[in-house]
Length: 340
Image (cartoon, rainbow, N blue to C red; front, side, top):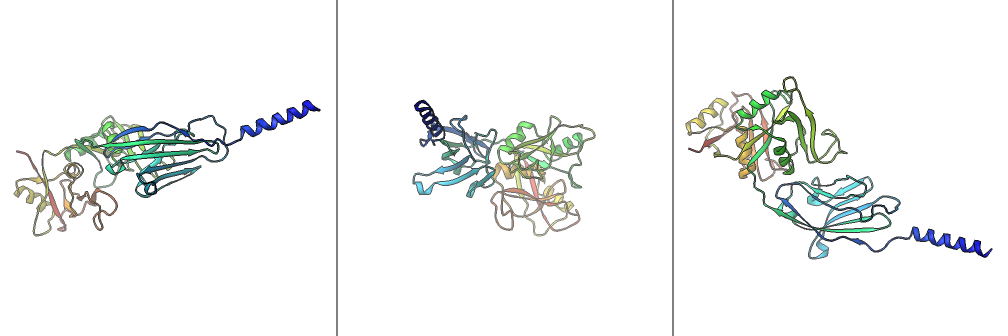
């Protein structure tokens, strides 16, 4: 009888020990991460002990720490299938979800304001893991800009040779995968697939959603792989180098037809600007103007670097008005004067 009682007591003691909660957080050494301005960056964080038994959903919280604790910013909260981002981090912060125990945070389009100390806290019902990360942002040097391009008729009308010519006509070249990847790191989001110079067809996604490769896939480049250069038709991603001249809005007393716009630039000792020119001026020079103007391909566009009401209220962008009737006298013109 005595031996049986001892066995029972030992069994209960082991059972209680196995399910007692670990109360001391697993503190990891602080990590320092560097990122270029405008790039994407991943802040690593995963459970200290990956083989610990747990029940229920894992809870992970990311915060940006301030010198004064009440001023800490909530960045992201993840619990089970539910994730919520806060404030300036909405649509810019994602959990990579490469493994069940990995709650690394991806930040899109890093700004100088993102610099600082971040804290990741993970709780699986048994154990707390805390990871502090210092993010430092360096000003990046950009020597060109990637932009999507399609014909005026509709999207997906270009085979590979036509795509090459379309970029050349706009003062650019077909982008490489490395150039598109850097543009994606800088925040380029485009849901239409386009040719790259290696014959593959891809598109960059920073804000996953169902019509753009699925909402369950993380941010990144979506690829259709190599396509038949002769019979396959898509849009194209072009790469325009930094300007070696002056891009400007030509002040005119009246609106112009397309032919009048071309002549007005010529009369000013310039040429009507190409699409590559407006993107380079916008992205690399911060050119900002809310006036819609003719460009060389017959499109009407305008560049916005400072989002504001009635121009581009939500984002910095080169806005496309469309390809209006060239005889329509409703717009001004953007010109480009090359260096002599």
